[in-house]
Length: 432
Ligand SMILES: [Zn+2]
Image: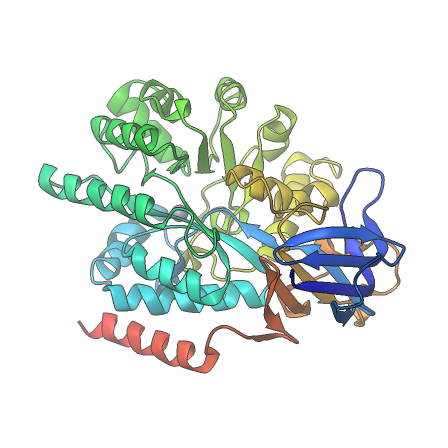
């Protein structure tokens, strides 16, 4: 017997070219959407009912780049240059992180994300077993990886690579399939070439995709040219990374030729506009990337450089900043920005069954309360979501067919305890 959920009188953002919303009914059976339409579906007398009146249903938002545990460093070192910020503020504190710190920092982030309508997140960090535990307990979908910085002696390098491989193997497909894994050297500027090649080999051996930071700052690109004689895209191409399905974070500084290479190898870009703006890294060439056929999705990056995990904000920034930079108000239209935060997010994480409200997809969806001033008049719901909505509008959240947020409250995590433990973890880090 399958578990059935029938939503009646709802507005469903299907985000098709010719039709952005459908009014009527959505049926969920177990973890899958099995019907969306204006007529009541047959055979659902035994279904649990949710009255969708006053609610706008959207595919859950997908955060394709971040380091969840870094929420413990929110507000600890703002308004600094990237390299100085990393070397003087982030890395010394992160070196002290224990598994317990990562657990509570991740829980803090996951709590913020699911209450804010994010149903899938990517996480690249250390102590990943704890990240996977939070993912399992919270009900969110996670694409997880042990990120490795290779600026260390060979035996430490090997230890990190072994950890990355063991984590990827142990957790891929776990939590009812909500956890998938990737292989992730931290960045070309933090990993020697032969070390990156070892990660590429591991990804081949495990048949997993790859993720890394690339071309976030102009200085990093210039350093790559000085060290290796080529820009980062050619560097990673030569090291074999693009022989695997790959998602790159940032990709702010790209030439036309580099964009062509990314498109030809179907390499995706996780665009992180909030973090890039705050660190003054530059503005990624998103209109050119989209035009070239590159899959561009959205990420917050860690909360220390954002400083929140609000994916509505990233969607809005993606819609706004490229207009401002190009002088072209058609640069990234609202529907395209919303797809970057949903459908393209799933695609860039190599998840083919989420990111869209459609029959056959996983039931990963959210409901916004539209009975508020900023959703009136009822002109264009896509416009309202992109230019007007925010995380506080999230009323309900379902992942894999299970409700994890109800009337704004998280059903799976102890919110009060997480806030308390995260504060204690931060105080412990400062005092050690
Ligand atoms: Zn990052």
